[in-house]
Length: 367
Image (cartoon, rainbow, N blue to C red):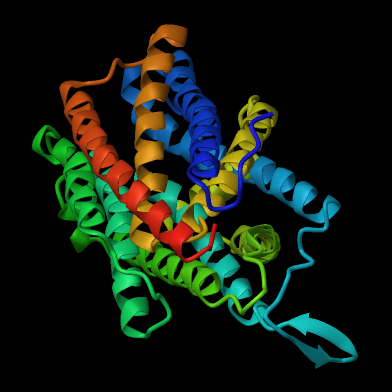
């Protein structure tokens, strides 16, 4: 077993590999259930409608599988016993003070999960949706650093190599816009679409701020308990999703197209719903690595956000290639390869920044 120290480059590579592997598997599963199966089940004229329905169904049942895995591990291993800066007595119990903001982070996670898939039910091209989702996280991560540096919560500076990596990462996610035909930004005239997009961006902004606040405010001698953060966040997210799901399912004759889809997917799922839950287990595994990368010890939000997003972008391209060979999916387009080129340039800049950061952390005896 490759043993590494917390905060080391070796540990970072391990997390990236785990994230890549499970994201690859989940990405192939997504393409199988929402593209290949739809082609098998629907004639061309009904393909789009059935694909939207399968997107919603896959969201529901894969989320169930992912949450079951995350909760099972977090609870059985007692990760929820977080190592706190200090505790407050409430009804005779010692409550970690961090719950004040980790629970809201879980609520934000509960918003991010469904809005990610709901983006694909909007009057918006798939590529524009992907650019918004991926690009916003990269930009938000940089903004979080700027805010926390000004608040003197983050004591590190963002290296110029990280800034260059941000530029190339934005180019990587934006290159598809130059090849995408149609779709555009007409969704701005759709109230539902705007609400979903704003909800996604605000929820992710708050979540990334909270993650980095937790990471950057550990008291002297208090370990950065990412497992504890993950466990409490997941418990909060699962409870929120469950409550919202029950409310949405209870609405009679909903006027919203998305709520109708949600109810229909639960009442009349396809014959593959149990396999979608199984596929969701890999989504649960992705969640572990994603959170641990976002909160990686000793790194800026800019760096961690870039590593997270770039790894997922590479895994997405790998999933497309794998799907092509497994069941005749679409082969990566020219835009995908150009995007990958920009990603590799960003990775080079991140590698330089990582070497500088490790030297800095060793000098400060933080790793």
